[in-house]
Image (cartoon, rainbow, N blue to C red; front, side, top):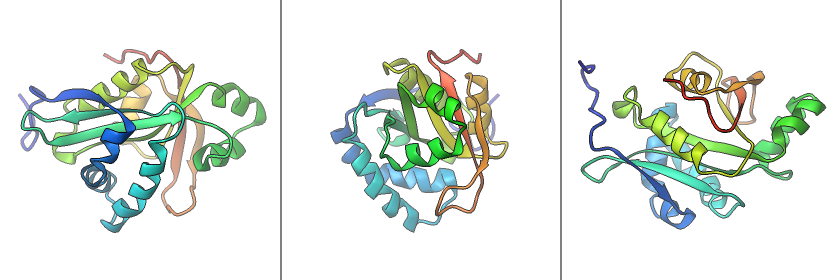
Length: 190
């Protein structure tokens, strides 16, 4: 029995998109981002500027979830993390030197992973995450997520992510974040 208000997973497919394909659907993706993160609408336009730049970074990889009617209902993307990148440099300073070397060498930064709230809780986020992780040539995947008990946080734990930093405050967001890392391949949490 499925929860009221939840759509069945049947028919939702996961696709791999290039940076150009993703860039062509940024408005739809940022609408998902705003809803999933519960941010004000104007943050979608701000985040789209960064997302567009991300599509040209080394190692860019993207997966999207397309509903059976052709609607974009989720996405995840990232790239090879390197010195000089905003997130990389902030997180590197937050870690002990040995941890930074261990985790931030040969790592993929999962920049975004979001599913429309109406499509959450039915496995789409897990499918996006495992498809993305299975298609990259890195030793580790790194990410940051709000430091609270959410479906996303439980998904990351379930697939092998461990704490690298907790209660971390990124500039521009008052919420504390957890910085997590996982060795690849991800653990099958089922």
